[in-house]
Structure formats: C-alpha cells, structure tokens
Length: 284
Length: 252
Ligand SMILES: Nc1ncnc2c1ncn2[C@@H]1O[C@H](COP(=O)(O)OP(=O)(O)O)[C@@H](O)[C@H]1O
Ligand SMILES: [Mg+2]
Image 1 (spheres, rainbow over the protein chains, first blue to last red):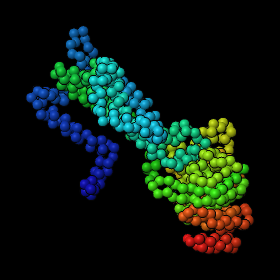
Image 2 (spheres, chains in turn yellow, purple):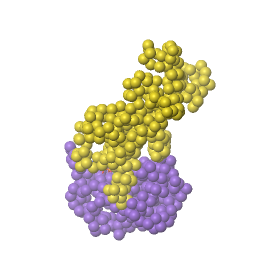
Image 3 (tube, each protein chain N blue to C red):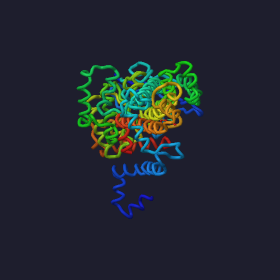
Image 4 (cartoon, helix red, strand yellow):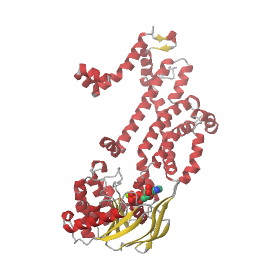
C-alpha cells in the first residue's frame, strides 16, 4: 500500500525501484548505512573502546590475508592464506553435504514409499533429531580425533535431517494416479521409485537441500572451532584468541559470502531441474 | 482377445465406515466391443473400472480378463484417466513412450508407432511440449496416445472427457470414434453423460447406487461408422428418451 502511495506521486520513480538496478540499489541502503555508522563511530581505527576495528582496518587486514605473500620474517599467520581457509571449509561442507544427500535422499524416498521402512526407521530419526549437532562434538572427537572426518561427520548429521524429512514428505505426497498410470504402463517397483516417486518428490527434496546446506555451513564452523586445526571456523576462534578482531570480522563476512553463494547455486540448480514445476506455478 | 468377465463381483471399501461400492455384479464385455457404463456419480463406475484395471482388489466374486484372473495392472489394459494424469516432468514424447521404455522394448520397435499415434491424435507438432503447456483436450490426447502405444487388448476410460468444455468434448468424441473404428479394441468407457454413451457405445450398462449394481443393459443399434452428426438423428433421440426414462425409473 505504501508503494501504491509512492506511485501516485511519481510513477517513473516506482518503475525504477521495481527494475533490476533499482532493486539492487534498494538492497544496498542498509549495509552501506551500517558500514558508514560503524566507520563514523570509530576513532583511530577502533570502535567501542578498542574492542572492534573500523571497516577500513578490516578491509586492509583482509587484503593482506587474501593477497600478500608471506616472507621469511612473517610472524602473522594471516598472510596470503584466505583462499586456503575457504578451500578447507568448502571441501568439508561439500563432503559432508554430499554424504548427507547420498544417504538422506534414498532413505527419505524409501520411508515415504514403504510403510515397513517408515515404521522401522522413522521413529529412530525422530528421536535422534532433537540432539543438536553441537552435542555430537565430543563423540565425534572421541571417534575421529582431531581430523577432517570429525568435521565432515558433524556436517553430515546436521544436513541429514532436513534432507531426509523433506524427501520423505515429498515421496508421501505423490499423486496416486501417477503411480497407477506407471503401473498400468508396465513399470516395476524400481521404475516407480526412480521415474515417478523421485521426480515427484524433487521440489520437496530441494527444500531439504537448501536447509541442509545452511546447517552444513553452521556445522563446519562449529566443528572447525573445536575439532580441527584449519578452515574458516578455526581461523575465527584462533584470531579471537590472539586479539585479531579485524580477521574475525573478515572471516565472518567470508562465511556469509560463501554460504550465500552455495545457496544461490542450489536455487539455480533447482530452477533448471524443476522447469516443469515453475511453468506449472506460472500457469495457475 | 480383450474379453472382460465379472462374476458375482462385490467390492467393499474398508475404513471406519465400510462402503459397499459394488454388490454382486455380473458383467461381460466381448472382444472388440465398446461398452459404456452410465450412472450418476458415486454409483461405483470408477470402482468397477479400477477392479478391471487391477488397481484395487475385489472383495468377492471372480474377475477375468481374457479368461485369466486379474491380479495387477498391466499394459494389456490401457487406462485413460479423467484428468489425463500425465507425468508433469516429462514432455509429450517421453510421456507417450514411458510404457515401451519401462517394458524394455527396443526403441526401433516402438518409435514409428509412437510417432504415428501422435500424428493421429493431432500432436505431431508438440513432441517437446510439457503437459502444463497443453490445453485440457490436448493433455487427454496424450493420455489416449500413451495407452494406445502399448497396443492394449482393452482400453479402460474413466470419464476421460468429463473435465473438458462442450466444444472440446465433441472433438474428442469424434477422435475416439475415428481411432476405434480403425483399431476395434475392446473399450470399457465410464461416463455420466447420456449423449456420450449413446454416441460411442455398442451397449450401455446403466448403474445405480447404494448398493452399486448394473440395473439394465441397452444395446445401441445405431449404424457404424458413427460421427457427431448422429447426435441429432431421430434414432438417437429415441435411444435418449428411452434411457432417460430408464434412469428416472430407477430413482434418479
Ligand atoms: N478408496 C475409497 N475408499 C472408500 N470409499 C470409496 C473409495 N473409492 C470410492 N469409494 C466410495 O465408493 C462409492 C463408489 O465410488 P466410485 O466408484 O468412485 O463412483 P463413481 O465413479 O460412479 O462416481 C462411493 O460411495 C465412494 O464414496
Ligand atoms: Mg468416478
């Protein structure tokens, strides 16, 4: 309604605000305002009595972290190894998330399709689900030690629940007549699962993938803070200990950026895979 | 080939309150015969068709297709659903060849036939289209094509034109008459539309509800081949008057 009021005053302004460029500019107002306030409230590059650095200091620290080459006399551990930290974290998310998909999607299809599988597996999943991933940390370290696989294990557990639950939901809601039609055309149980239930469940599966990937990024940071000695989560905690708040903030921004990029990738994959679905929504 | 035989068949749906959908029904369809099941909604027409299709188990009696008890659905009985029920993520071509594909038939053995059938139903320009891009009538043409491509011994059609507008419905009826004139497969056709039943069928079985029964069988002796022009002939009107009287007489 407020937009309608603006349009009454100036239709061309409203048109601009609805355009791609206009929307982009609108989205930038809040972050730029925050950056400005943050910068303006600092003196000598420090905010809140020295607890936090100003944005320009963060930017400089990030440039060093990302692009400088460490020399023989370099003492700071945050020189030229930003990409490395990201690669460690992203690889772990990819492995853990991939494992969660490999287990969660087939299991969800099975639970949604077979009453036997549902009665056997579903209650266990429901009982284990309230245990937060952070509570799995001690067990993970006890089993895997300070190793890569401990982190991957936590990510898998975190991403697994939303994937399996949404897949189950999707497999349960398949139109009965699609299954009847496939049976009538000579499909066997395997054909039905692969060619009817799986594609019909894909919209729900993608919902699960998006939530699961988000949890995967949370899990990788948590586990790297505790269970491994590399990656963005490790840098975050380590930099805090040595009082490098500029690196802490640059690290946070990096996590946000890569979490956002991976979500963007999934959304685009979904748009491409579910073309039929998009057109359906459009037609209705 | 394509004979259907129900002997004292009953069907009760379980649940909190049991529903007797079919009560002691005897019913035969001969090879190559076009039979319409006519009756008000809820009288058990779909139930009967679903039993023949093998979608539901019967509660009592005997149900034979080509002298074999029906145990499960299969490509020997092509089903056409009311809302077409195409797989929305597959395009027209993929929907039509789904049957031969899952039956592991070699592509060379079905490709020409599938093309020919799509041409007959008027969709040769739409192989790549997704179901959502088609009108209701076109979707149902695909539904018919995917049943025909399997060369079924019987076609089971459950109010296939019930959701279409009057104009489209007429053109679909004309198409079905034309296709059937050439194929002469057995057809079991469910409808609640008297005109449609008379126009298409060799024989109309009138059903009543609670419990679901076939109360009368009326042979339609209109000459073949028929076309939608028959809808206004004197003979046609006579059949219509008779069937309307029949349906009123049985309490509807
Ligand atoms: N799956 C089902 N479970 C319980 N009752 C059903 C089921 N399918 C149909 N019925 C009931 O059986 C009766 C006949 O239904 P149906 O065969 O669909 O009739 P029609 O196709 O003639 O409209 C109706 O009373 C309907 O409510
Ligand atoms: Mg019905």
